[in-house]
Image (cartoon, rainbow, N blue to C red; front, side, top):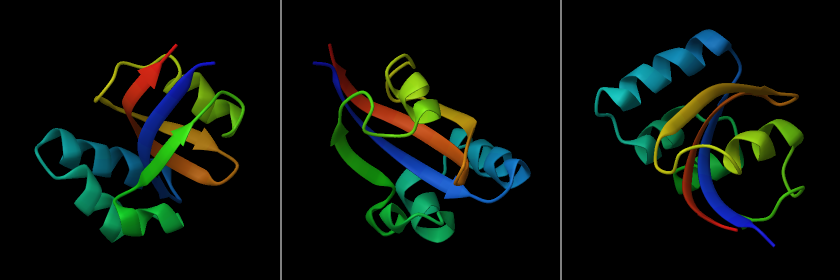
Length: 93
C-alpha cells in the first residue's frame, strides 16, 4: 500500500495561507513558519505529520499528498479545519 510523509501548516484564512506560502518560497524555513503560525498541534514539531497511508487523512489532504511533487509547497488546500500548506517529504507506491 502507498505511504507518504508530509508536513503542513494550518491557518484560518486563505489570505494568510497565501502570505505564508510566499514567505516560504522566498526562503523562510517551513518548520519555523509552522511553529509560529500553525493552528495544528503538529506546528510545535515544525508541522511534521509523520507517515500515513491513503484514507488516514481527510480527502483533500489525500488528493494532494498522493499526487503532488515531492518537497514543493502545495496550497492553499481547504479542509473542514481551515487552510493548509502541505509539503510531501516522501512517498512510496
